[in-house]
Image (tube, rainbow, N blue to C red; front, side, top):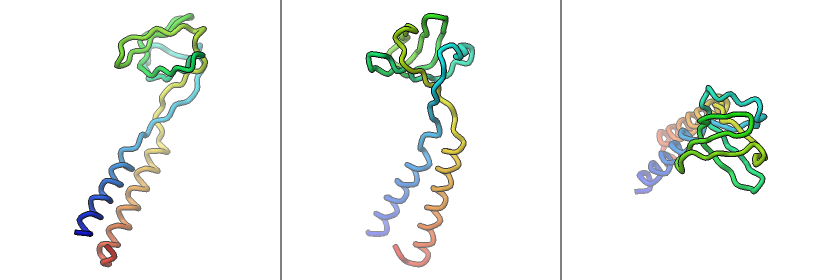
Length: 115
């Protein structure tokens, strides 16, 4: 009974590590945004609201993001900070490495009868 419960806890722990987000956001200037890439953005507005979504279009005064609430038009004057989502290879490697080390320690523990 104890071993079965430990296996479930360990499997849950490994899944949480393996499926952690491998993405992070970095701040960009409004003028540097390229609308052809259709990247995902997080926009912080001066009224302290944050909007996440995929870029639909951008011109010199507005940007339009698409998310589960539909298209949202954001004026350049309302924007406090713009962040673009980027893939982080470091998070992927660290997450996979931790998962493998944990799995190895657990496997050795089971072989030695510690669990």
